[in-house]
Image (cartoon, rainbow, N blue to C red; front, top):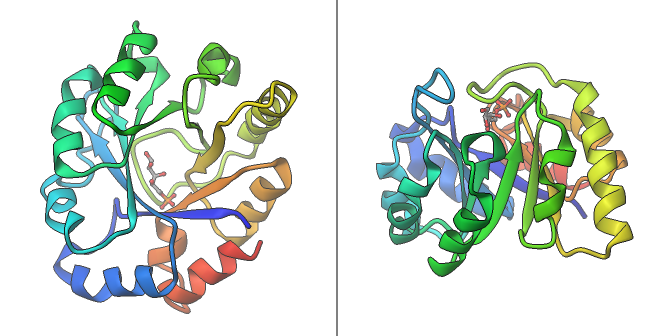
Length: 216
Ligand code: DX5
């Protein structure tokens, strides 16, 4: 069964006491925290205070998705706040191996993301050293964008590489994921679907939205 990560980028944090229990009831696998610096991407992302605030309110796995320049400067802080996985963008570092080591030293799992225009092959050399490869299916920076189907070619390439070398690395997609686009991703061999609007803006509510995605 495909895993589901709920992106809280556009969640209403004044109502977290309503939606967090819903995410737990739906047995969502992860919560994704979008971290942005208004430099690498032209947006601010989720206020990191909420990650720290909700950390001791739930046992749900937290993955922090760092759409920032100099991600190495955020590793220690997010480890302390309780992120379980640190996902950085390959486009934002010249020393990925050093960053991978730094993240592991802080006892977090490691993910590398490829943005909309970056070929998947850019992260092939690191697949045997990381826990997750994130294929952006939109241009990083904003929720509610339309799914870029062309990026499924990257999923196929990663699936083939990971399977042929028997690597222990999940493939995750993020951006414009709902039941329709999610089904395309599952067919392409994705392990984890990230969805924000597809969950929080679903007409039937959070629990139904997650159930729909889980059973694709
Ligand atoms: C883009 C963000 C979004 C967010 C989910 O930088 O990473 O992809 O998590 O957005 P939607 O609303 O498209 O699921």
